[in-house]
Length: 474
Image 1 (tube, helix red, strand yellow):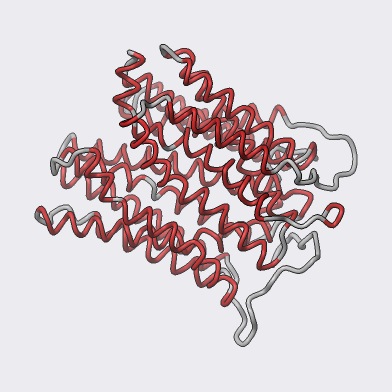
Image 2 (tube, rainbow, N blue to C red):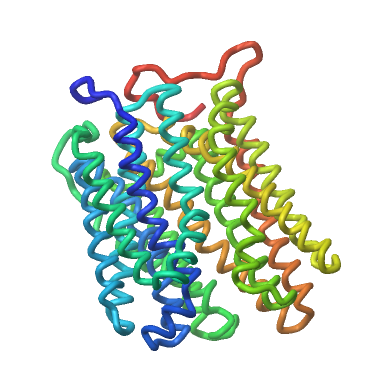
């Protein structure tokens, strides 16, 4: 811990504001599609590309940004992310067509890649033990809860003030965040030798992820057995094999696969990927109640109000369970409740009001599960990684979130669309939601296999002042 500095509530608030600015431009955009399309006069396809670019660029660059933060400074990279957020938001405010929209969304994706791992690393550096768990709870409220808050806020701002005001608020939060964390000392990982960036690994990784994304999102349009889809799938498999082989041999690799030798870190990251993939439920359930049950966008948004409240309410509960009984118990219960909440939403054969009540309850239980899971999972990931690689480890953990959510939505939508073309809307919605139940069950299994339990009669382990937890096998 540099110069004896201890994290403050001002620092926590600044970091939460930084995380919220990400959700304002990431999540709010999903809710204002008709308004943006009408205002800018662009096709729905082009707008969907613009929306997805932020998550894609965030997912592709977040590990690289986390690794760079360890070398050049975590505060510097946080500031870079916030400045990029302002520039990206300005592009959208000034947009009058597709060009600035696309440029702004790409810049916002790069902004998110900088903000997310660097802020987690700052939390790890300047807070210890229970205080770190409290700080990460507020980070989780900004991250997991921010998606729901900004979804509602974005809709309200767009309805009463105009959609571009969302990005004016985003700029305000970014500037406030920079002001609030200005007194936080710089933090770097201890590294011997010159800093070398793995541009080759990044290039292979980007091509590999783009091919996978195109197969999942455009496979139906291209034709699942078409030369384009099959070619992309082959490039993905070759890219994945090459990337793993090349990275294992490099001293300054983009992804340090030795991090996954630590079972708790591996379990937190794998389960995080799979539980974020369950985000496909939100898309399928909202689409189905609007198309199949005649709900308005506002009414379908109200259905998920219980999810938002539950996530926000349960995050600190998850923190308290973590402190009393270790990480495994709340992570298991979080995954179980998420599975139950998602599963009941698949009961599309239920009639009108009964199905509406069941979906509302399902969303709430889903939110309770995610809320309980959030802090124990994040704390396990950061406390299991060595201090000189906490930015990279946090980047990998958050990449699991971004790519899990992105691919979960894409896979769920592909299943929904495929079943709908040959069967009923109800069957399509059930199949899409069952896909997410499978993700949740796999997440539960990864927690049970990888996360160590607490030995009977002992208090949950509280990290001490030792700055470099050991990494390696169990």
